[in-house]
Image (cartoon, rainbow, N blue to C red; front, side, top):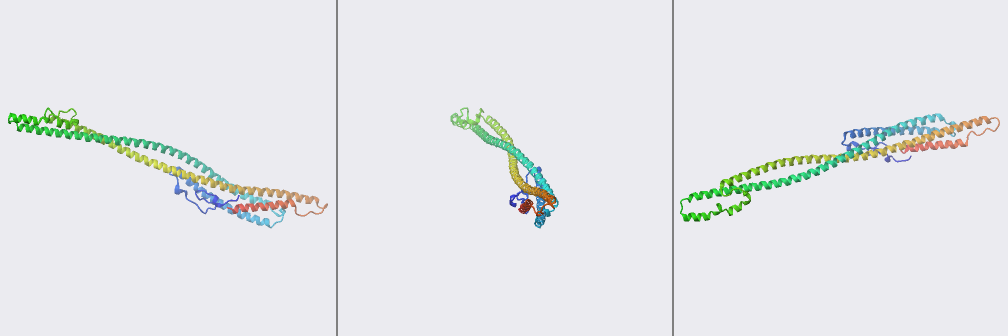
Length: 362
């Protein structure tokens, strides 16, 4: 198989020639178990890549050596078939070890991809649940804020009512003092005074109208009743204030929960993003591993072809030699070469060349 080194990738840039790596730990998952597994997988991939390059180098040396030997021969009869078979067997053993290593990486990669996918789904579900909770809390916060505004308005109105009632009591006190000062005046003056002060007596008009909303059934004709009403209004305002404080505490607690929940959502989204990145890297590693395996399978294919050619040539040679022995003394001695064997011998040379080209590509 002919291919370029850049086609073989692993962790980001796990090149087949091993000259460029990008450390996956720069973007490792926040999940400790996945992080640990990824680091172990990266280390294993580096080792297998290094072993692969070593195997390729060793096989190149073997191929060059055997090819140089074959080039010195003209027929298969001159070749030590068993020696070449032993070399092929040795190279094949190296290939099988590397195949097992990369199959192990591929299996681990697939398992980790499955783990990442499941973890992503779990975190997405959890994030969606927390986002729903966040929406509910936001609505609850709006209700708290609305009720706090309403309570504040109530407190303001109750205090205003209390102030008006106290003002009314002050007016009535002044009114009483004025009456006492004029107690000894003439009947006519008293009659006039009664008309003038009519709004502050049983015939309430202007003052009563000004605090009518605040009166709430209180007796506005005497200062004591107004003060009692003001006291009740102040007490109600304080109760509302206590209620407001409690609601403010709930609001603060809710805002704290919302902030923490938002942090959890952000963390989950970030972890999901990292897992998606891990998943992408694992897919790249899976593709790279398949490329490594394809190279090894191509080499193994060449090994099998060479082995088959050697066996075929060995049989042809034995048959040719047996025929020469049987015909000796009866016929002319045939040429020492055999056309079929020569063709097979050329095929063997071509197979070695093909193997060399495959190895040179990597």
